Image (cartoon, rainbow over all chains, first blue to last red; front, side, top):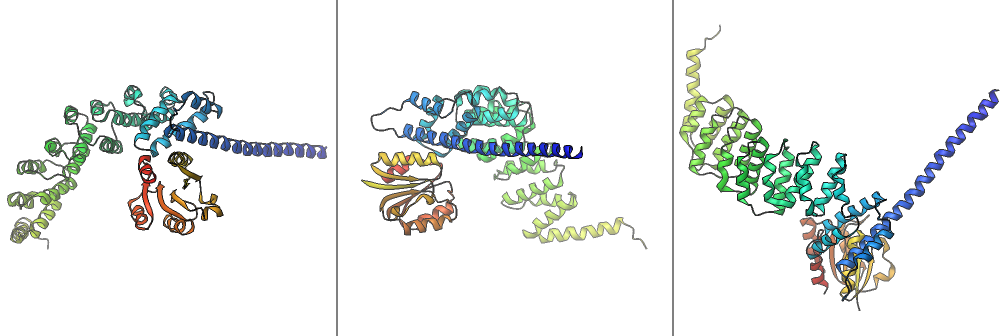
Length: 353
Length: 115
């Protein structure tokens, strides 16, 4: 009886082994076949691109022939993975070519098979497919889908709406400020930086009309975004927009305002305004940053302002003010304050015995 | 007929450059890596070599010096993904390098050099 069970066990194990080895062999063969297939698609695509960009003299490139060639290597709607591979190749190619050829390639890509494959991803229920579709659309410069991207700017998923917002900026440039300051959801710092950088890369000449219209937005992230844009494009005439947020009750907005203002130098009037606002900042660290900035851009020392801080500021502010005064030749004022504290303490504090 | 050697790992860039070179009346040998070079290439005396500088087993600058020593040629053009300024400066400082083009590139610039 025991021998029979053993034999049965051995048979089952053998069967498992056969299945395991079989699947390993299958996956090896499949992978080899798949790599060959992808290489074939790649080399066919390379040949098509090269012939399209540089056709023989007196010869027009034949689009039907191109479509037939791609179909022959497996670019058909029933094989989405091949189609995806082709899209990746297109994006890669478009990223590496500039000049006339870039425009030519863009035209070619609107005419060969997977047209619409990226756009159809926008209707997917999965966020990563949607986001990928948006990315493909803007990477391949298919601006005919701008409207679809605008619809997705407030999507529930952060990655989808991020990609859509970047796409809108790429296609519409400064006009995108018609939408971006009025989004339903917060925008992260990283996304703000990405938008500012994209604007700077693709549309380096600022369109003040669209920017100034966005000044009315009351969303906190929009204020930060606009301040960053003013800083990046060095719009000296719009500094007043940043100054108004220096003493904003919200920490993040103040932080952005102080950061952005520090790349400008100010007029005497603006400087006075900032000094007034200085007292309304509730955070010492930020006060300190602003104090350093004021000192950096001021031509000469505003003694009444510093003396006021020296006597009435918090301890850290007092220390920094003393530092500034001392290093700028006002040692007597600092010494005077130094002795003043002792006389005060001697009067008010009782000494324990 | 003039002779050209193109070495690019990216097959799409390789094919496009090959096509450009052929249309400019060159006899073109296009390969994807330095392993595909053979003994005949050494004495082929190419008019132009258009090459990448990123290859397995050799540092970019070493590659430029090596290829200048080993393969007979008149001028060398670099087309590469590794387009940092520092590399460009160092490579252009060596003799016989006619052009350095970081990807993304405009093929018209290459055409001007090889026409």
